[in-house]
Image (cartoon, rainbow, N blue to C red; front, side):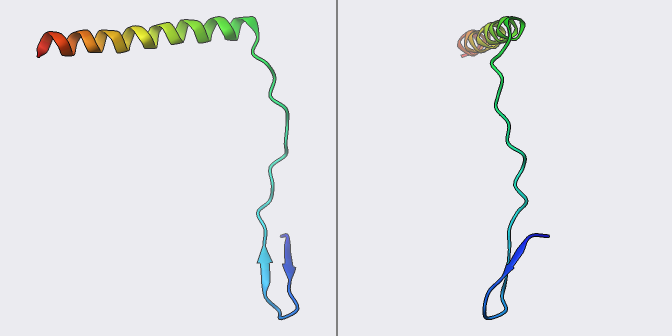
Amino acid sequence: MRYTEEESGLLNNFAVEPKMYEAEPPTGTEKRNYIILGSMAATLVVGLFVVAAAVS
C-alpha cells in the first residue's frame, strides 16, 4: 500500500491511480450506430411530446 509518513508520525494514504490510455476514434460502424441510436432517441422524445399534447 502506498503511504507516506510525516515527521510527526501521521500516515497519508494515496489512492492507486488507474493505468492511463488514449481513447481511439470511433470506427465507421460505431458512427453509424450512434446516428441510428440518436435518431431513435429523438423519435421517442418527439413521440412522447405528441402523446402528452394529445392527452392534455
